[in-house]
Image 1: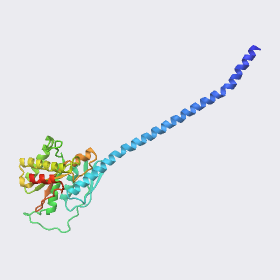
Image 2: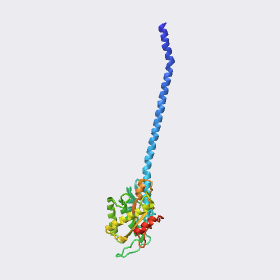
Image 3: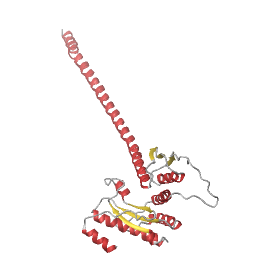
Image 4: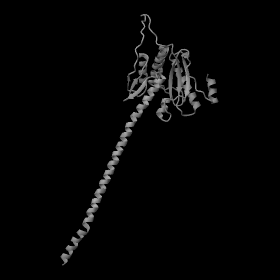
Length: 291
């Protein structure tokens, strides 16, 4: 009776506890599968999100470069040129009156930073009427086209390595010397060209202080060009302060682009841009003192 009784208890225990153990094991396996599936889905969406973010950066940068080149075309007097950037190559389209202006557009685009190459698809219409010119005479470009060509060449020279200053002052850095010498050589080779030297700052600090600083920096560049053989009467300094930005003043890169020196070719009979008006008496006194 003893062995039978004992055997009966072991058999009964197996029937009573076996099925619940298998059910619990099944639940654990199902839970692990569900958890693994959730982890895989999360990983998939993270990869998609990271990949999407990485692809937007270069696109935004190329759009910024396109806007930068388009603005440079407008400043150079070539507003009809259409700009598109494809894989860091600037594609130029539109119509211009002469091959010289087409070449000038290429040079303006090449002068901008981050440009890898330029594909110039600008159309130059054939002249309707052709005139026979004597061999001893050569036609001159119209005054506005000649000035545009000079402006494009000067802007390209100034943009290769922008002129930089020590923080908060008018001391020109040593890295800027090659650019100063290049501009001086251009002006010496074109003795009839008059230039307005325009200083710009970012928006950090007081507006009046920035206006004064930009004028002092333009005068410092003028002094360096005079020292390199350019006649003083051909150089007119002007400070614009923070009033003419070419980029935002919210990022470090934008502020760096706004702190710049520009050179404006002055056609015959023109005096260039005027200084910004300000209501601050301190600025008026400073202008009177410095002349």
